[in-house]
Image 1 (cartoon, rainbow, N blue to C red):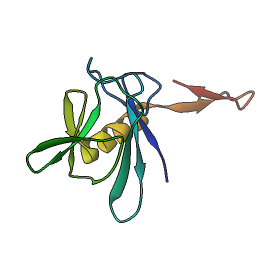
Image 2 (image 1 turned 30 degrees about the vertical axis):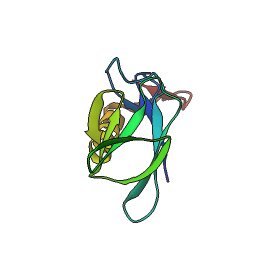
Image 3 (image 1 turned 180 degrees about the vertical axis):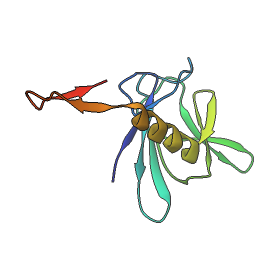
Image 4 (image 1 turned 90 degrees about the vertical axis):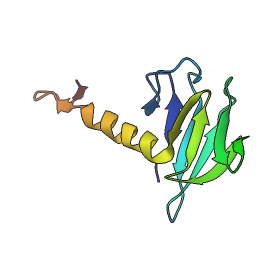
Length: 106
């Protein structure tokens, strides 16, 4: 199963352009049966999951796709984050140099 890094840094698989999100804010790891493990990688703004009565800060939490999470002040769901990752991956075109066979990203 794949791991998805989250943050403002362009090298992250899920890039979030929000100043309250750290450059390398966290990661999502798909588990089984629609469960995801989301981790905060010592971000400055913190990571939270919505529970009855408000937000609960976490370092690691098991969540479902529809659960709301807050990264800094950026509120989203796991499902939306994974859709963003898929859309970003679809934008990358890979070509090969016909002479050398070397992979060229464009």
